[in-house]
View 1: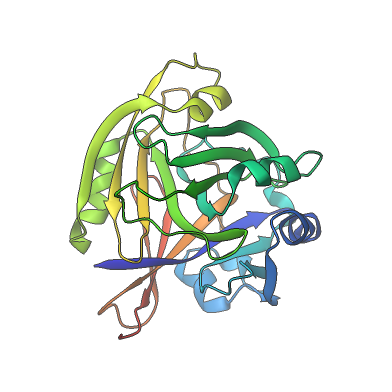
View 2 (view 1 turned 30 degrees about the horizontal axis):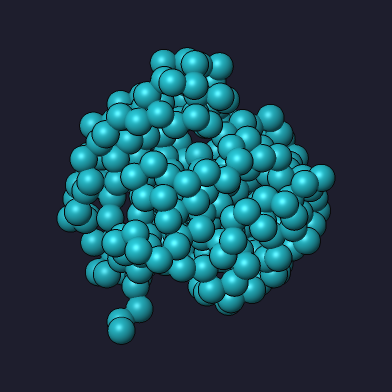
Length: 274
C-alpha cells in the first residue's frame, strides 16, 4: 500500500526566483542543494535530467515532506491545470486569511481567495499560482471537520494532497488499484480554478475522487475537460512543471518509478518500519 507523500518534484526554468519566493513568502527553508540523481533520471526515462541543478525546500516545522525543484532552462511555459499529469500540491497552513494578506504583491498570484468549503465550513482554502506556473492549494484545517487531515505545524506546513488530472478518470484510478488503498468514489462538483484556467463557465462541474493514504495524506484524481491535452515532454527530459510525486510504501525494495495513466511519474520508496 502507498503510505504517505514524501516529496514533490517540479521542473522549472530557473531555481533562483523559486527559492526566493518560497523562502521569503511561504517561510520554507532550504533542506538541500545538489543535482538531480542519475539513477532517478534513468528510472524516469529522463537521462537529460541527470546532473541538473536542484534545490529541496521544506517547512520550518522540519516535517519530512519536501518540494524539490530541478532547473531545466527549456521547461518554461507550463501552466498548471491545463495539461494531463500531476498538476497541484495542496499544503496545510495555520491561518489562510493571514497568509493571503501577506501574499499581496508577492510572486504568488491568488486565483481563488480564501473560502470555506460548503460541506466542511471549518476548512478554508485558497489557490495560488507560483513563480514557475505551479498551482498550490493552501488549506487551513479547523477543528470539528471529522476528517483525518493534518493540522499545520508551522505557518505554512507540509504537502498533504497531490492532484493528478487526465481525460479518463477510470483509467487514472486503475493505476492505483494494485496498491490496495481505499478509494473515495468520484463525485461531480464545481472546481472554480479548473474552469478559470481553461476558459470554462464557473458553474462547470468536474469529476474527482480520492485515493486514501496514511499519515493524513491523499491523492486526488480529476477528470479534466476536453479542452485540456497531454503534457508536451521533450525526449529524454522530465515533464515540465509538476513532474514526480514520491511516496513511501512497504515492500517495494529499491526505489522505482512507474508511470500513471495521465503520464504522471510515481516514485516508490521503502517505508521505514515504525
